[in-house]
Amino acid sequence: DQQVKQNSPSLSVQEGRISILNCDYTNSMFDYFLWYKKYPAEGPTFLISISSIKDKNEDGRFTVFLNKSAKHLSLHIVPSQPGDSAVYFCAAGAGTASKLTFGTGTRLQVTL
Amino acid sequence: DADVTQTPRNRITKTGKRIMLECSQTKGHDRMYWYRQDPGLGLRLIYYSFDVKDINKGEISDGYSVSRQAQAKFSLSLESAIPNQTALYFCATSDSARQGWQPQHFGDGTRLSIL
Figure 1 (tube, helix red, strand yellow):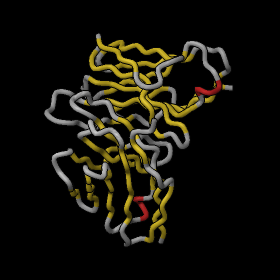
Figure 2 (cartoon, chains in turn purple, brown; figure 1 turned 90 degrees about the vertical axis):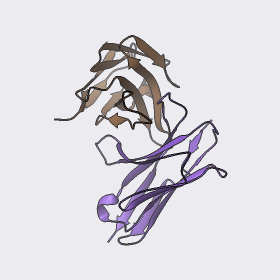
Figure 3 (cartoon, chains in turn blue, purple; figure 1 turned 120 degrees about the vertical axis):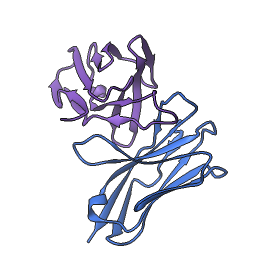
């Protein structure tokens, strides 16, 4: 029972263009969502988060959008850079438990 | 120096062996977690600990045990390793002292192969 789904295993985007990574969830109790980036041979690093009381959060080139009615969130990277090439995981949590449920990841490749 | 340190970084061992993976942190966080990553499955929670006296099972705890020796140390043991425990293992920490949701911070992982 995959409560957090990333249906695109991979995505290729040209440098300078927008990258859009998508994530769907099924558990309506989730009220906090995070995106992590992972390079090979390193652990995931926190990128950006959003709580369920918001529908958008921006941090520089990264914006996360949350559509609660559709149980969908997306990460926009504008403009995409070669250094953004990595695997991106979305994660969700509920209440104050601080446990996270992760998606399966999307590998982003930014080409020159 | 890394804030969350995992040892060893790589380990190859045989079926039936007992293995311990270590995690130590200098972040001063009270909460610690163990995950495994398998291709196509993302990260799955094995065990978590909210303080030294609090240990909880995650979604895939069978075949594993943990020990929280101190606030800064959380080890994961495989009592009798089997090949389907071959995976990438991550330790993570988070801080409950700050208000609101706090992200988890990960170590660089231990790649474990069981032959």
